[in-house]
Amino acid sequence: MAEIEVRDIRHVYDQGSPDETVAIERINLTLQDGTANALLGPSGCGKTTLLQIISGLLQPTEGHILIDGEDVTDKPPAERDIAQVFQFPVIYRSMDVYGNLAFPLRNGGVPEAEIESRVHRISELLELDDILHSSPSNLGPELNQLVALGRGIIRADTSAILFDEPMTDVEPSRKLTIRRRVKEAQQEFGITALYVTHDQHEALTFAEQVAIMKDGNLVQYDTGENLYQSPVNTFIGHFIGSPGMNLLECGLSQENGDPHAHLGPHQVPLDSALAPRLDLGWTDCHVGIRPSSVTVQVAEPHEDTGYLPATVDQVEMLGGFQIITATLDHTDVEVKARVAHDFAIDEGASVWLSFPPSDIRFFHDHEAIPA
Ligand SMILES: Nc1ncnc2c1ncn2[C@@H]1O[C@H](COP(=O)(O)OP(=O)(O)OP(=O)(O)O)[C@@H](O)[C@H]1O
Ligand SMILES: [Mg+2]
Image (cartoon, rainbow, N blue to C red; front, side, top):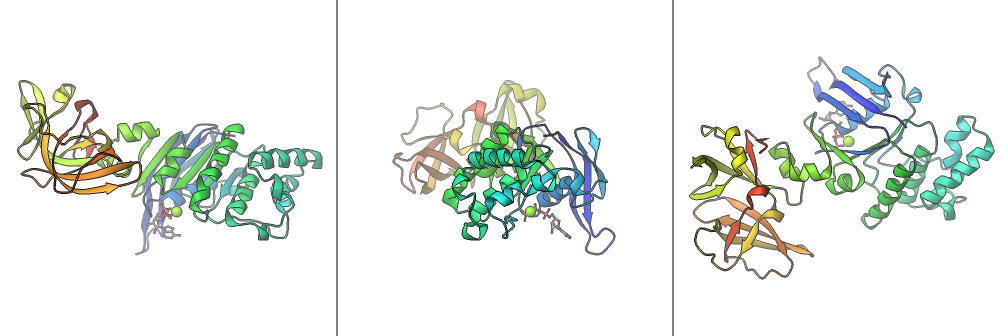
């Protein structure tokens, strides 16, 4: 497989016409050889456009695509050796599953003996042995998608595989199994993979690194852990996690050199390491805290323990846990907290919330200010 580099790519549809659409503002991204990557973002942010530019189905307005350092921007898809697995599987109904898997190898003039051994390896890995001689017409969409995937990875000389929302047609209960098999194949063959989805769960379970796009820009390309713990801006904080990070509009002050955020009459101490990076004149500031980091206490705490009084508006039972939505007293600041499934709490109850300083993130003009 290969390293794929997206260098200064920009794409404008119908440039110069009244319908002009800037689909990609400017993107730089390098996918390391043999890694699993995901491309995640809201509908219309440019994911499919970027994928088609990488595969060569679309010529970018500006910029270059490099495969292992070689500029392939002017090369047609066939010369890039990039396999694509689409939302709806592309299957040859006139052939059985074996024939479908063997197709790219037969096309490339690979000897039959080698074809047989590769087909069997792929079939074993994707657990297709029992249906090798079935007709695709008799299989459901998810098996067809696995066959399409197998055909994508069967060639030893493929540079990368791009998946565009491949699970759309797959029954929810089967998604995990199929994704696991795809992931195993990705690891076993050292495939450079780019998996497009707007489902964060799918992206985070498949990929080592996830590229998050918004409005034609790449906002953050990072591990799931970093996207969760250190979002670069409020968009990522809110977008990742379910529910996303609490983003609470706040004021700023400093007492004895220690920075504090103000939520109405309430004060939240910030990490003192932030002090040199803050400007007390700033407006448009947000405190970010994950619902899983908010501590909820029902009994009134002793004074000066940093707990904020709040009233519970809503309690949602989500199986293994509950999400509490509470409003800080004397404000309209809403905070979501994740608590255990057996945490006893009623709507309308008074609670005390606290935010551990090391879990607080601070944003100015929606950009993260690292401590
Ligand atoms: N062929 C086209 N002609 C003109 N505009 C297009 C074309 N294809 C996409 N666009 C526009 O470009 C932008 C990016 O579209 P794209 O399909 O790349 O987004 P996406 O992230 O794949 O969305 P989705 O999650 O809905 O698949 C959108 O505003 C879309 O309307
Ligand atoms: Mg798309």
